[in-house]
Image 1 (tube, one colour):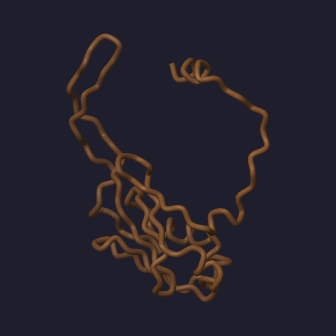
Image 2: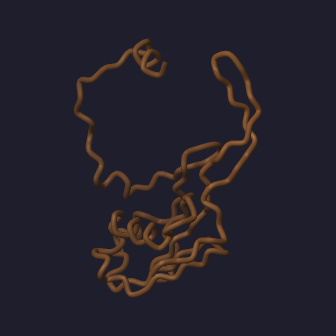
Length: 147
């Protein structure tokens, strides 16, 4: 169920200071727009995320499926996007399990820029596995790769 996103820009323009090896230039540049979106499942607030303001219905359904809140997309009975309030409300027949609901709680997922914060939840560790690798990279090597 596509949503008309024409009232929210996906790109914004700002004045920036571009610094090259030999000069500094004041110029206009395009940036991806960030839009706060809160996803509800069966009337319960699940998460607030920052995203580009397009395909919000697909974003919400994909998030709920990938995080285990719904078992299949076929079980979704309806999706309503309220662009003005930054909400997606999803109704699903096979919604949140009580264990997932208790462990997950509400959290914020951000782009990780500026003052953004991500709140850790206990459910994040349920599928976490230790990284088994002998890879070691020196600080000098990292600096060289960044250059």
